Length: 125
Image (cartoon, rainbow, N blue to C red; front, side):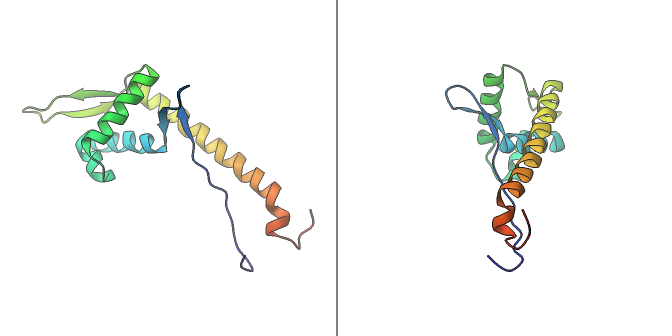
């Protein structure tokens, strides 16, 4: 390691069902945030560099696995359609963000505790 290397621990967090199917994670969180911002799955897909179908399939699978609706979809037409997050989606996203933030903070503490002597060999334990 370099003289003053700063290291950080990183991990991925997701929720899965008993069969190992992904229910929710950072990717789906980003999808929903983009849909909220743009009011459209199509615009969210464009922003994220994904296909409409990829986002639609993941959101639909999450809805089925959670048993809640995440989006209210308005079919196109003269008004142009669009999608809006449900209150349940907003609530779920907030809980996920909170858990994710706590896990990151605890991981950072554990990393510093376990690796401080390796990363800073001259400092006292």
